[in-house]
Image 1 (spheres, rainbow, N blue to C red):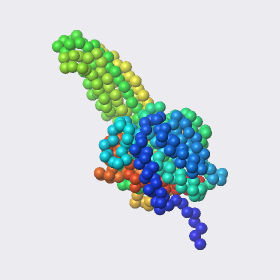
Image 2: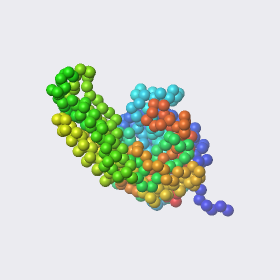
Image 3: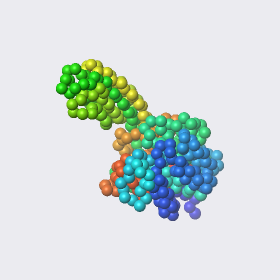
Image 4: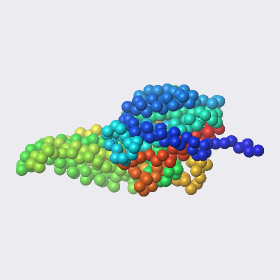
Length: 394
């Protein structure tokens, strides 16, 4: 007689595939921006209540927490994000967004649905001993004042405490069902810098009577290329990108000002602090050297995704049991993209992992108007979350 406990397999979720696909495509068709996820939150809360969860709405503005306790063991937290992006969808799909200028271009519709699939299975089977908290989070895409930050500030881990917290994001470029892990720093911190150069405008034919902010801004752009190359240790990854430069109104007018925006990425607190110091010093020095001035709004965004070793090894082992070694990347490359799940990892040990979303034509990059979440992952991701809970609370 086999006395080994049964932990969730992908086959256990296959009967739910059609229903999960319907849920995912409904959410995809009705995307909502940060802190406007009212319909999505209501859908999540309604299903969780129907399955027997204690549900709390309005956590961190529009977040939803579902809690299920069986017995008296440990506590685990699982997070899925719900918000969409300000893009006009160009997929041509029958379930494409009905809201012009808004679409699920990052797969949060899939993340939410996979966690709902796990929620239904766990409520039905109750094959665990302890408490599971499901954190459905708003506003991951906001970049600052994000949903994770607001949920934490709203007492998430005091009101719904867990011993470890786990999150997941889809990953174009790897096949569906492929799990990617990395212990330690996995995804970068992300900061935004807005710079206004103040010069003195005038006639293009009399440049000697002006302080040309376009020349100053151009000098700043070139000087910033030295920050990483000549200030950061070459073994430390970092990026300083000037993504926006606006100035001028006509070819015969020297404007009064120029405006730049920077994206700055790093993986350690010392490097992050160094980048902030050097960028500000260089901007002011360059402006001053031309007789101009500059104002800088340096906005610190998401921290580094820093996975704790024990929880990462546990999460990896669960994936290995579920899909086998051939579908595991145990030491994935660091990613210069960022994630506000980092705020949760600052409060609790845990792991943020990635799940392949497709390769080539089937793996369109996120934040692209042609992107769509791969529905093949729905039973896989749901089974993974369910098994993770069963194993952690066994």
